[in-house]
Length: 392
Image (cartoon, rainbow, N blue to C red; front, side):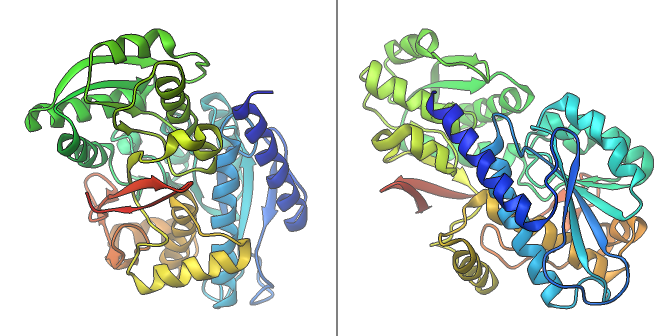
């Protein structure tokens, strides 16, 4: 069993155990409910629908999301819930696959207890469900969806994720400090192609020469055919625009098979990256959104403390984004009312959503793009098997 499949299988098993402790586990396109701590009233719960990869190749992300989601729900309910009612989650496993997202979306719309939906992991999967939610007037909160086209579906589609343009500008800027000539590889999907175009534009402004570039398929197992010419172009550094497992495959191929020793930029802040890349991860630089050890924001520091007390380790960027998503929507419901219309109104009018990412503080939404207006990325570097904040 290869490392990616082994980790995905382990992640799915862990999430299943968590699901059993919280309610009846769902499978396929089914759902399971989680409502955190005890009810604050006898009223029916207010539910948020979750579309996420509990199983499949992205199951590790689903595990990280669920830990952030469940901690947020427990804390919201411990603090009075939403307008005195219990907050709950209804989980739907989609494997972050566009076809499954599109198929499950009508089920969430039909459940009138659901006042908003969060997820999915990949922008392409989320976007497949968005038209159904838009038509029903149900807020779709794509908390990790950085693709700029994600909110194009309509006025009920929102995301607090830092835009891919902002992320890749920051990425190209740190690369420019380390290298004059680079090779770039990127995942062959809408997100990867957008990321490359924004990165390339900023690299050109910085005077960074891209001496070689190529895309690769998401399920690739051997990237030597594209990385040999990437190495042979004699770059100062190699940049990968992809996900965590992809970054590990790229850096392992470069280091172990091709003898490339220059700087590497790529991967994600996920355990799988370190599990697969091992020592080759050391020194990798990424553009991220959160540092558990570097944050100076008081409420973010409390979140880190609470997360570590519950799970025995510090949260990463995906856990904090999941936690923030539920916190955002609970805050919205308490500012207006815990209904579909109330959530939409809050996202249109509230200007002080608590911010745990970046440098903390608060944030609001740009009403034209329906994206967070003022969340800034940070830089992180891999040291001793974990990412820590990096100041360049």
